[in-house]
Amino acid sequence: QVPLVESGGGLVQPGGSLRLSCVDSTFRFKDHFFRWYRQGPAKGRESVASISVDNYTDYSSSAEGRFTISRDNAKNTVFLQMNSLKPDDTGVYYCEAFRFGVREHWGQGTLVIVSS
Image 1 (cartoon, rainbow, N blue to C red):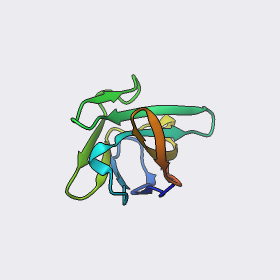
Image 2 (tube, rainbow, N blue to C red):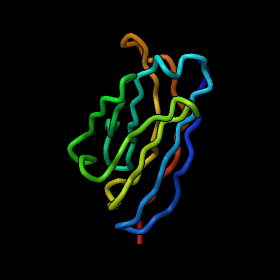
Image 3 (tube, rainbow, N blue to C red):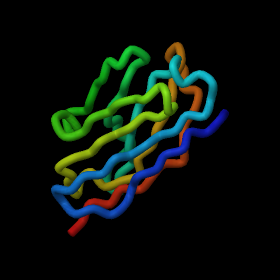
Image 4 (cartoon, helix red, strand yellow):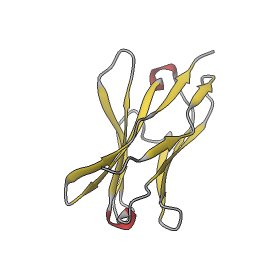
């Protein structure tokens, strides 16, 4: 599989913001459904947000109202804008791409640490 490339993670104080990016270098970006999920130190894998090919978005209850997922078809990039970050948001954030319900591509993740 062609790996996706996530970036934008880092250390941020509670209440701060980060913008994650996920670059899809395949030739099927416009056909892909994307999902961001995270793996936290105390929690298992948790889906955070998703976006369909026609920009329908969905969020977990913990992300709703704070996070925004978007896609830029011209840049083959999916973004996750994260505001009002909390320590519980700490984890490695991964991007994955689906087509026809099948997971086709994924990345190595980007680390987000929310701490004072």
